[in-house]
Image 1 (cartoon, one colour):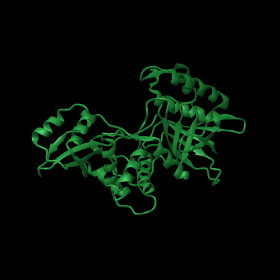
Image 2 (cartoon, rainbow, N blue to C red):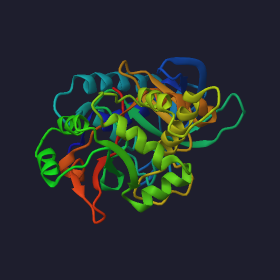
Image 3 (cartoon, rainbow, N blue to C red):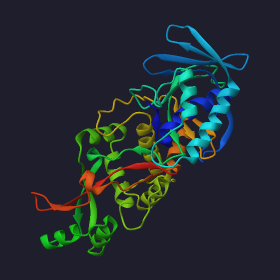
Image 4 (cartoon, rainbow, N blue to C red):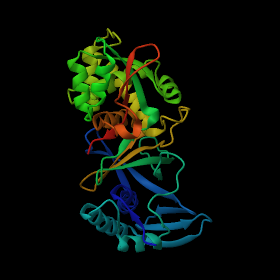
Length: 360
C-alpha cells in the first residue's frame, strides 16, 4: 500500500532528509531567522518496528545502522540533499489534504523508513544526537517538528478538557435573554450581543480538574491568567495574537503588579505556559513537570529552511512560541461551549474553549 500523508506529515520525512544532507542545523531567532549558531549532527535515530541510526561520517556519507549495530549501507549526503529538494517541491505543489510521493517512498524504503511518522510515546517527532559547540556535549535530544508548509499547527489542542467557565455579571439576564442570545448562531455575534447588554465575563473555574491542577502546577495564578486571556481573545475586539492579548492584559493589570515592567510580568506567565505545553504538558493528563521534547523545536520554514530552537537557549524557545502563536476559536458544536446557562445558584454562566495555534 502506498504511503499517504498531509503536508505536515511529509514534512517530517523532509526534515530527516534535509538535516542529513546539511549535516547541521542552525538556531533560529524569535522571527524564524537563521542565526550564526549551528549544531553539527552526529546521529539521527528513527524508531519504527526497528531502530535505525543515520550517522554522517568523515567522507560525507550517511551510514545506515540497524538496531543490532550492523552497517547496512552508505548513502552520499548530497543524495539526501537532492531527495529533500524533490520532496519539498512535491509538498509545496500538492493539492488536497493527503497525497503520495512515489519517488520519495522508494528512497525512504531503501534506507529503512516505511512510514511517515516515527514511533513516539511523547511529543518528540525526531531524536538527534547533536554536538553542542557551547558545552562540548553530545546529547541525544528529542525535538518536536513544526512545519509552515501545510496548515498551521496547533500548540494546545482544543477539547472538552480546555473549557473554561465564566459567570456573567453586570446584567440581570432573564430566561428569555438567555434563549435569545443562544439562538444566535455566530459566536462573535453572540459575544457582541452580550457586550451590548453590558455583560461582563468573570472567571469562575477551569471545567476539567486535571487541567486545573496542571495550570496550578505551573503557577498558582495561571488559571485566572489564562481565563483572562481567553476572555479577551473570545471577545468582540478581534485580538487573537498571543503577544497582543498579553499586551492587553498588561494594560488591565488584573493582578495589580506594581513593578516597573508590567508587560514583562504577564509575558513571563504566558511564556511559562507555552513552553510547558510545547514540551510536555497536555490538558487531560496529569502533568509531572518533565519535558518529553527535551531538545526543543525544529521549524520547517515556508522556503524549506529549517531552524532549531534548542532548549539550552530557553529564552529563544520562549520568544519563538510567544511571537508565533495565536488563540483560535474551536468548533462550538464539538466542545459544547459558547452557550449561556443558569446554574443551580441562579447565576448565569458561559463556557469558552481554549485553543492555541501557531501562526502560518
